[in-house]
Length: 267
Image (cartoon, rainbow, N blue to C red):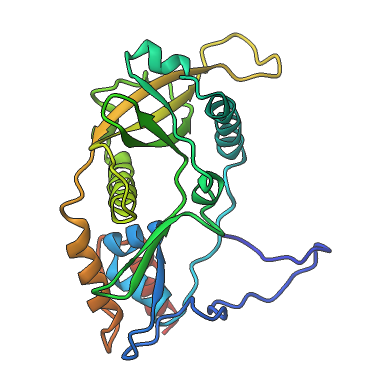
């Protein structure tokens, strides 16, 4: 969120409405409509904001990506890809007595690209295509099933505790994210483990100096997924898209209350 500038650094006019074909839902015609995993999560947070975005075409202000997080993700993918090509386990598998190897598939790069690819399936009841980019997938050699993995980079003075990590109010969406990924892969026809993993990289701040590098502590956090709620929410999302009027204000939503306060102050 901020001031928009063009490639020359000049101020540019902001268009707050979506213009790309297929990004705005047209009620009543039941055409296939794509919903990303992140937009699905947005729907779960606030139906009003979701409706304004997907039906009315009101874009949320853009946010820059966290460059350090992106760098960690890219380096981890390279690290696991090397072992993937060799069909060898990662040292962390041995540390946790997991008979895993990185899953090898011709579409892996496509599945990991959230912008132009991702894992996906078409829900025939609603004609909604759910898609999202996974960080990685491992393969359980004993159970012969896929294991969904998400990389998390952070820097906290608090030690990452396996049992407590997902209890944080700020990490509840992590669990929703995993539930959706597992649901999609199962709908794609894969046998997928109930247990997924967060590969948490915590940059330590306790060192006396920087010396041009960050030191990370790695913690593998298991999560037993629950996909039982997903289909019901997809159906609910379809009903919301078909509403003739904007859903009521969600008083727990900061964006809703910000927009409403702005209207009151201007009027």
